[in-house]
Amino acid sequence: MSGLIYLENVTTLKLDEAKCVGCGMCMEVCPHAVIGINSNRAYIRDRDACMECGACSRNCPTGALSVAAGVGCAAAVINSMLGRSDAPCCGPVDTCGGQTGQGKTSCC
Image 1: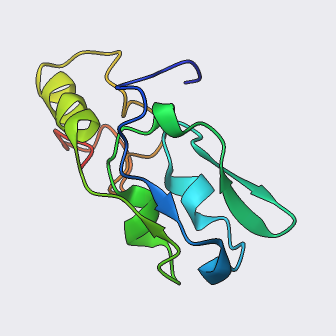
Image 2: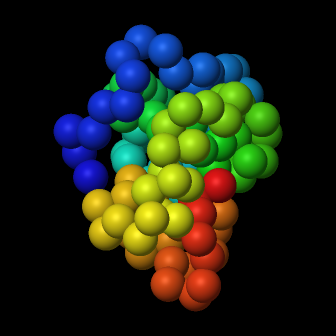
Image 3: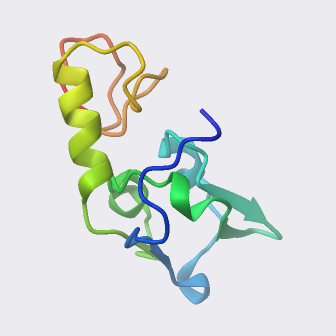
C-alpha cells in the first residue's frame, strides 16, 4: 500500500526511541508500513502515510509510540462503511488486530 498520503506534515505519530525494544509489533499491525526496524529499534519510514489509526501505539508493549486518532482513521472508517474495496484498511489484518472480512465495518 505504498504511496498513500493523507495529509502532509500533520500526523501526530511520535516515537520515543529510548523506549523501543525492537519487538516489531508496530510493523506487524501498521497497514501502511509507516514504521521500520533498523538495528533492533523502530524508526518512522513514511510519516505522511500514517492514517492515525493508533494500532502501533495500542500494540507497543513499552509505550514507545504515540498517536492521536485523527482524520486518516475517520476516512478509513467511512470508506469501509461505504464498502469501498480501496479503503486504506483493506489487507490481511485490520488495525484492530482481527481478520478482515469477519463482519467488521471499520479499522479503528
